[in-house]
Image (cartoon, rainbow, N blue to C red; front, side, top):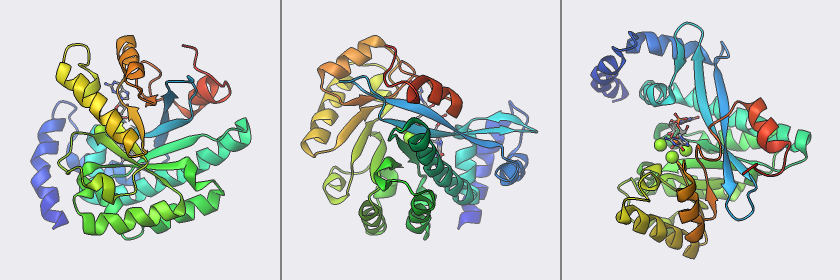
Length: 281
Ligand code: C2E
Ligand code: MG
Ligand code: MG
Ligand code: MG
């Protein structure tokens, strides 16, 4: 049960947080109030088209700046939110906020910018996800193809549950991306069973391109695979010029990473990438 799962993970959080002196109970009680206290914020990381240097899309990444505890990383609070079920209201807030932002940028910059949001496994399998997304798209009056959801390979293992959900989202016109591609346990057969639009090559493959021939081979293969299946391929965690060159040579369509820009506050993303049309590089 969820409760037992929470207990099983307790030790992990407790030991993990000794350094900061924050225990899991404290963290949970603060996270519970984070939405109403308006402590959550979406940051936006640019996704660059490697051919044109344009920024057609951003990934929305959640930030929590707690009034009492300070800045807490998503790597810490997302797993806790998953275990406690808080990921549902938090995830719903993220979806609503992203749709609002799409509409805002369409008005302000007269520009269609796609936003990708991360959907965690528990959130994906909740009963109301499709309704929630549909509602948010209608409420903000956005083109549904401007909203992308990122899921991981793990949630696709349960094909019986996942296929109908993804098909319903696809029918709404939402884009579907596989995050951290290449690190999960799923077989390749799901690439033909699921309506996937985008493959995001995990950043662990990108880091060592220069030194590791295996990583280079894997990246090249994923790019070919995605392309031949009609999917968009994007490389994550791009930090260096040599990685950009490698990806361009390998015909990778898009890239995302510190080389192009860190996740930014909305005003900064707007200033640097929305109100101008091209990157400075
Ligand atoms: P992710 O979706 O795979 O996001 C990519 C992570 O890599 C982000 O960390 C991003 O800041 C970081 N990153 C981007 N470019 C680079 C780079 O060039 N080098 C390096 N070293 N890192 C880079 P972040 O923002 O800390 O998020 C961590 C994870 O937390 C995300 O991994 C995602 O799984 C989860 N997460 C973040 N926001 C949300 C959310 O709104 N909902 C859910 N369910 N999960 C979220
Ligand atoms: Mg992601
Ligand atoms: Mg990722
Ligand atoms: Mg990740």
